Image 1 (tube, helix red, strand yellow):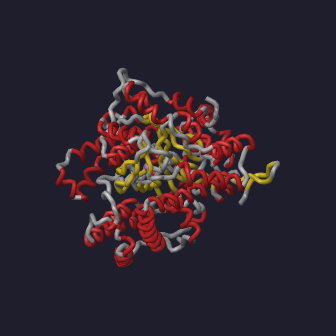
Image 2 (cartoon, helix red, strand yellow; image 1 turned 60 degrees about the vertical axis):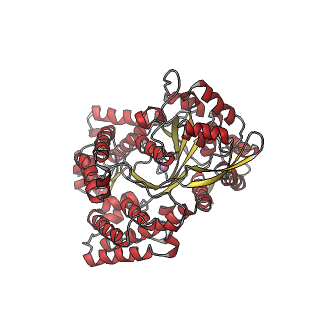
Image 3 (cartoon, protein in one colour; image 1 turned 90 degrees about the vertical axis):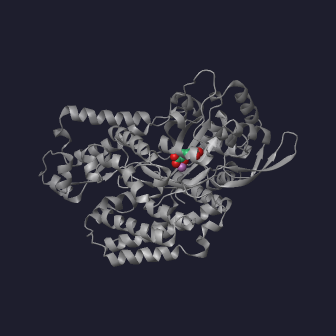
Length: 575
Ligand code: OOG
Ligand code: NI
């Protein structure tokens, strides 16, 4: 393991630790929830199909087992915390793994979808692979009597052990953990902090909270750990996975799945271009891909891939309909399938799991709880504020159009998909067009042709699209690394079988970001500034390398430098 030298030995590298933590969490979760482990197999079948299709489209495309493993290892999880002091420990825990709080999500002000939750997501700043959406229950969202019961129950638990706390403090004192200490902390994570125990406490309180419609509060305060609510892998093409899961769960017949797979595979063959490859396979270098020829994938190859996938899904261990399950979500969250922005997510519904409650008098009650579910996601380009507000408008329109459909009509998948996609028609569908309209962020780099031309003094100042067309510069779209509050609210709602939780406080309470920052004891990074900063940093770098920075108009120089400064300022820890 690579690491930095320290007085007592070598500290473990934080991002390697992060990969280890998530690999172990995934193994833990797979053992706790067999359906999750199965869904990974379904995803693997789908990803292999997409990989084979890409190899047919780009003869130079190959994926080693290690690259495939890294790509499939990427995940986000979600945990729900009850007390501010627990939340602060959580922030300090994730710092060990190089994960910092990014963005503030106020779930209390989402209209009918509101929940008594504020949240941030812990992730690395640059090229993150893993994330944790970390919710905190706001007890003052409720009337005083409920609030008092919630807080009394929360006061009786201790989730971080003395050893876990000591290791986190050790990390802060030394500036790192040795391999042995890191292993101990990861053990604490999978054996205690994030582990589902199937045990809960105070069934009376649980029942009262559920009956009052406060299921999310019951889900948090009656349990004994910050158990993972879900752990979400990535997929190379979301709609293929959704169809495959629905088939394995018995919701789509073989014929219907086969037909759906044909539609999706034809889309992949038509749309997966160099930008798709760069977005989904980070190990591919620009210059390597630039020379790759793309071929038309013959219909026979597509048919063969569809048949092979259908066949592999018939394996006995993928008969998921035979496992306890509650079906697949009705709708995919996020943009229309043809609009490569932000992220798209889907999920199998929360499972009803046995739980044994220990009562305040020590007696035990056997019951069930429904909260843990199985999400999947595909990530696309990060939007600029203009792109994001356009997205929000489109989403509102698309959701309204879909919910206006009579129930029966929604069974017609193709028609519903079209109706949902219509409002998103205002978005261009390619990276270059999205960049040209300044709806997403680009990360620019000089090519060797650019370097040669710069050395010969042959480049004049020109607009970014022109620099790219001349072959002097290449651009990647920055991938969206965060979450979407409306999708998240949809997730809370669907897995708790609860529309939302209206506040019962006498006066409405406001939950500013500063409140969560104070709980964490540090600033929360604003990722709008981070994305803009990364884009500006790459532009400044390119202009300097091409010898064009000094020719840039002073006003444009100032604007770029101000964007860089704002991003740097947002990344400072102190409030
Ligand atoms: C968190 C939901 C947020 C997502 O993907 O948007 C989330 C939760 O259910 O606790 O994970
Ligand atoms: Ni999620």
